[in-house]
Image (cartoon, rainbow, N blue to C red; front, side, top):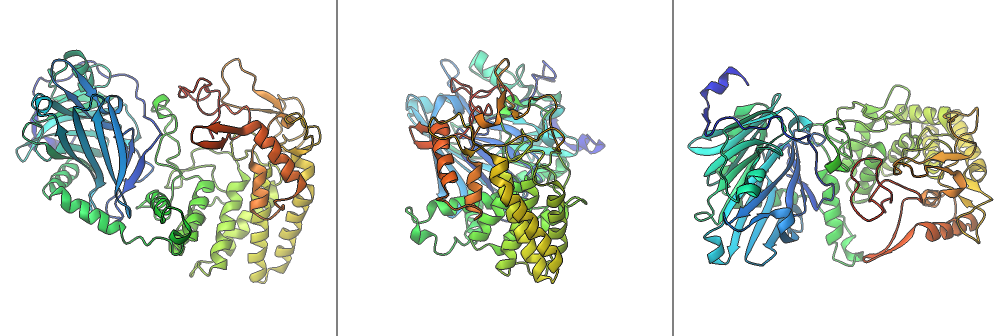
Length: 617
């Protein structure tokens, strides 16, 4: 805190909270209902919604989560405490079909009162707004107390956060900070009371669970895993707007929060929706859909939401922390990183929607993050800093394919892709056909899905090279791709299958490298792969012929094999036999057999990485 803090009107109340530094920090669920941001680049903040409540908020870039979650708590002070994500049933809606403005209508389980919340961002500032309306039985509402509970995880971590209560322009608010990042938390009507506590010991949730009322009013909680809570007078304010603002320093966060709250919520909502209405839906798609294009429009908006606003063209995989409830500050990575594979899929989808400019931004961004050897990091922060360092050949091939698609649509503008493509193709030639990791990141070897991307990438690179009169290079790349294709079935199939009684010849998920080949694992017997994320004591080594996924279908998608190829058809029989699952919502397929990355065998959530048992779909 700088010396300037002396000019603020701090509210000491009951002094410092007890129980420092609080429990070990954890994130929250990745089971998201929505992700959203304002369409304007000036609003550098994103939020997620899960189980009807506000989850991570990202600022100032989309790879930097700043909060764990925020929810409302209700109590009559005597007989009950209601927590939104556990004590309510809720319906989720979009306010307008053109915009990711979210409405959640939640009712307590006894149907006595209803809480309607709308979530948007200030269209021009890094402020998240939650407008709340409370309706119901007047006898209940007259006794009801409402509390807003927020868990800051500033600068990507729960440890080392600090907070104090503060009076700003006559209104009680809360201010949190860590490093140079500050968070201001307030409400349009002002908090009646506020408290700063350490998570698990002196936070407001612990207070309410014990006393059913807010009896703690700590003025500060410094340097720990904290949670802050403010009481809202709903006897006088059945409708109010909560604001969470961010800034590089206290004054920026406080001023932007107060400026946002100075304008009516309805005005912010109108501007938010008007901005998103500039996003034209893909022409022609609605006419051939079964829902008038609703799902298509939502899907396009979700993809657009995942682009950063400082690093233009940078699309993260997902605004979430996988298995967040089991992850702390020691593992800051996750899906909120750039994964080249996911980013190219996003850009390709937006290109199909007619957003050529967006796809080009993504390609140029990727070209700027290409490593000197022509490859790309397995995943990386949006400033280009690598996180994991594995070599995945499909993540080198996919940018070439995107470049080719843009080229064929005359969408490259003045950008010269040839040097970028040439270097990526050279890397593929040096390493293919063996990848250090295939798309599930666990195993090295000959992967049908990886080699499908590699072959396609080399052919696309050859096409671009020939157009640049580099005939010798084009011929070489095509020859190399043909060589891989000619050995594809030899490398990636088994003739001694054990997974289906009637099919012996089929594709495998991956064949491991043999002794003397790159990335060979001397600790494994020949022909055996090791699968991570299995439960302790559970078998984790399998013959390659015992494991199948649907990755071979990439060979059909990229035109390397016909859909009616007998080997494809027979391999699909094995996939259906091993991976097909009937669910209450229809048929699904698991990623691969023996996959441990997902729910526990009893359906419960994964409690720690490597402690699961049943794969996801």
